[in-house]
Image (cartoon, rainbow, N blue to C red; front, side, top):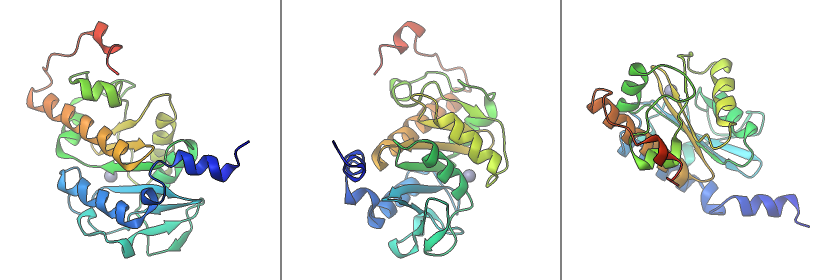
Length: 219
Ligand SMILES: [Zn+2]
């Protein structure tokens, strides 16, 4: 029978590299370079053993370096580093509720926010426009606007992500949360939702959608 630590090690695809601060920073910079975050907006989290690494408060993801990454314990108490992002509670709630997930991204891409203000909140918002979006994130739920940094937003997002196969949640007038077993998966989800949102906005919400009978055949 496998011990807990062995099971955990196997579930963390990528092993040490997954939780290393260098890898963490590489994906911070990727989110900025992909225009998924701007200014000091957006943040991310990854499990590191029993602890969680978070982006620091008040810094652009463009500028985050390994010695700026904040380490907190499972309760959110800072073990190393300065203040974590004000969305730390949301990242912790998502990771606590989903032991099979290791990475959480929160982004503010322009087209994501534009789509969020054109659509109505609900369990299935952005229509199935591309196969990539259908594969990674359809149906995509959207929650109504909730003030960033609040417990209600943290709990609401964590509850949505806990649903089967839900890997992303759109936040009205705000942005997107994506999750994954590893950094690559969370980024793939973010990029596919961003691409579908861009097409939705560029076609003014009139894009033809993938036929219903084909949706279950994508995957
Ligand atoms: Zn935000």
